Length: 285
Length: 311
Image (tube, rainbow over all chains, first blue to last red; front, side, top):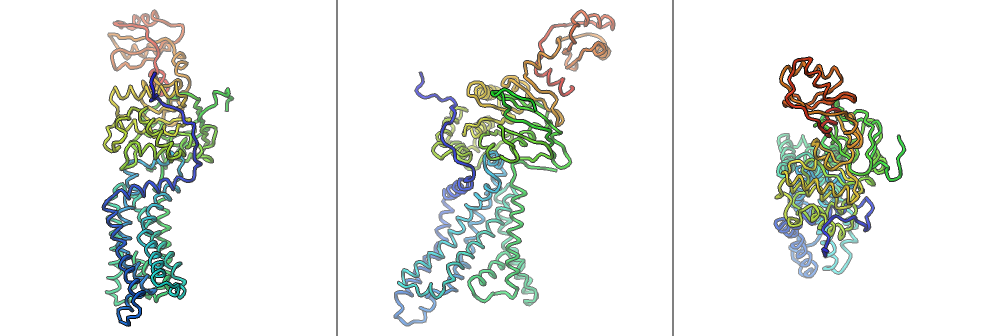
């Protein structure tokens, strides 16, 4: 008599109710990305600015008695946090491309969509899972270190004066981090759903971000600032919104509502593309 | 809709279902009932088999009609249905970068199993389908036969009540095909899993299924128990002649017989009740044809299929 029956057995254990699949998808994606050493190295590098700024905050808090002009540069301000996001843009681009380009494209290449959607998983849950994983990494290089810096500032200075004077900073950091992450994640996922090649998707996305910025700058320079089509540029829209969110003077003359509309439109188009492309069956008419 | 015994409640039904892809109509007002057990879905390429399965899975929305699976409406309860379904697609499908255990366990989790149970089931199911030794290998390194097995494993991991198998022996060598059909037979007969096996390979369906639904050009050509469908046929003879074949076939058709496979030399002749070998010899004599070979045969699923699609 065999000790272990290798035959098929019916399952009598418990089952989870449908609805939490997006969490399983997001968790699996995150685990998969964290296994890649190159990505871990970049993730560490993306926190470089955090550590540098932390040292600056420490110095400005603990050596405030030294009345030197350098302390003015080291002291935290609203501009410091705005600059923090500006310098993190390169990491936002890298994370979006590295993590997001293959998210749907690879599933389409290997016909995984029909596997996913034959399970109790809706199309919205599938997209939410992928989006969740991408947002996790994007917020890990923007929101988390920015809020961490605020906490460190309080700890180093031993007072809540700075936060008290700039109460809007926490919601501003949170809002801008989410706007930037949502726009990047939706745009990348939509592009990824249009292709079966992660490499091709990565090139198109990076090209779109860089080319739209160059086009905007060229048009502005050629027209001596008369033709300031902020809505054309992926980054210019975000920069304009960042200035408004951080209560700083907008860097472009274009109304900030134009940038809100541009960002909203791009997210809307991305959602429509995802709705069209994420299906269990390829419909060719 | 007809009434059924409690243990014979249909696992899937289609009521006047039409499925369209743009101008192309894949299913045309199909009404069909899939009873428990193993049911074969037969038809030539493009008959609408995969569209029917995709309709039952809720992947495609029917232009008209109603689909029910396991007593639930596909349109209103797709998730409840898919939690109890297993689907083995026709084309290769896997999640990139995963080994077999991770992939199958992940599919189990997506189907509602807790993580620990999903992992345990993944190991068991992979042994069952014959991938036990290769379960830590990346799926992208698998052979075609192994990819077929992993597709079966992911469909089985959550212990479905109903299994959709779309061309399960595609691309398999004879030994692998035999093993796959053994697994399908075992699931249907000994493990109590209801299954719908879609194939264009008649021997696969004949070996594993009790019932069959034949689709042709988007409509149901015939359906029923395979044994009954075969019995429904009249006497069959294998016959080889020397002489004017076309005239002989026309003469046989005139007395109500049907001829199949004449192009191969030996044709199969279906003779209506009341007629026999003597009548065949009579026709041959009248048309000065020499009968070189005449042997009684038994009706096969191929005959049922040929008749259903009018070949």
